[in-house]
Length: 206
Image 1: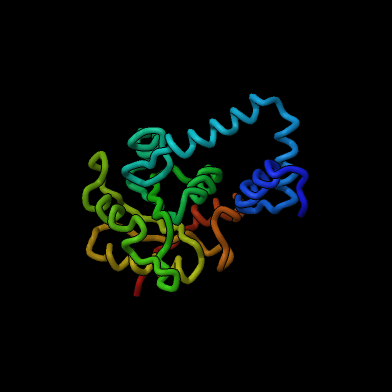
Image 2: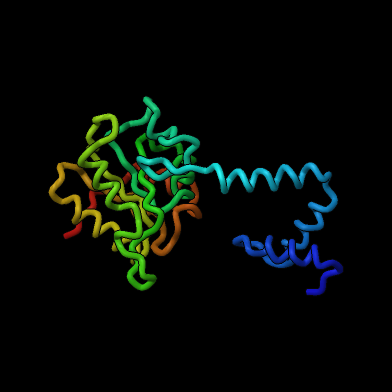
């Protein structure tokens, strides 16, 4: 692709690094920005910088937060006896959009994948076990819901976590397999995901 300006080429190159955006889309976005008032670009740039510099993660569940502890963990309206374990941040958003869950979350930040060199120590598993043994606000979790991808890596993570919790007095369940095997939660429609949460089943590592 030939560009009339080095500045446009650099902008297109950087924008096309974003997931799901190819060179043509990046070019359209670049030209769109050029047509907008300068203040629009400044606002966008400021928002991106603030995102990188000011975003925090909850010290309890590792969800994105504006404070040390996120609004979900602090909310008196949430059921502290339930903890839903997810792979990453988009999964929290997906489940919240179903309006079928009112418990807490725990964001692992990934799943165990030996082939990719990701072990238990590379995700937030130990902090979850600590939450079960030393619950926040003193309310001991009664159920851990595993809402992990229906993949080999997701199953490996679920198996590992269940074995680590076997001596704890806590129910471990997994969302019903209404979600296709090999799919990601963030791409699952809200009706299917909502029903999977409601019809969750006990999880066994045996």
